[in-house]
Image (tube, rainbow, N blue to C red; front, side, top):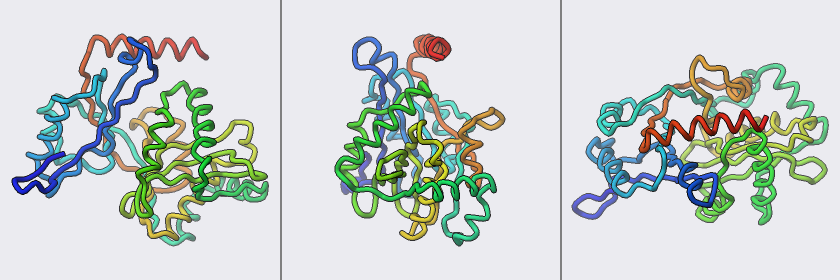
Length: 288
């Protein structure tokens, strides 16, 4: 956090250290730090922006690398980040304009996706915003299954519990659930900030794909967002331009505009990073 001479906050940045294992040395070798969106800086001050990163590097959480996942155009800070030895790589996002009418949004959904949404409704699948005490636990079990199947890291449930505990009526974690016969079969975790809803984590039980929860969830979240004053839905990562990515193809079928905010990345231990990447790729091949 940065302050001026009157102790007024002029900038803030949140870094989240994520590790896949608890025991040493795997806890260190699997550790990375994610900075969502970069710093929030008053008047876009380059001095404050750079100062926050310099402070982070002094107090750095012990991680193999740091990745900054931009949520808006950060081109004004490109020179500063290069001075700090961060590399920039292109990375896509999809933004859905919730200020459009529901009819306009529906018309932009791919016809096959519209049919699957109708099938979900016909099958009896429903979507709701849930605040029940046990919802997070039930949804986390879904996410664990999805991420284990995809062989990807997932934050511990403590991370989501902390988000939920610090949420307010205006901002924070929103948990949407897809239900069939009163059982939660899918979920979408969103972060509410200002007039934007951010897709954070989502998934569904594979055994319930025939109820189309992954098709109904985004559409119903769009509708909920419109009703509750949100004007943008950030669908999150859509991969690198020119590189095939199934998640991008799935998200594109809900309409929206493709944007390229990119990412910044800094490797703190280059030799270990190369070793870890090779080991991870080998592990994913062997687990198939």
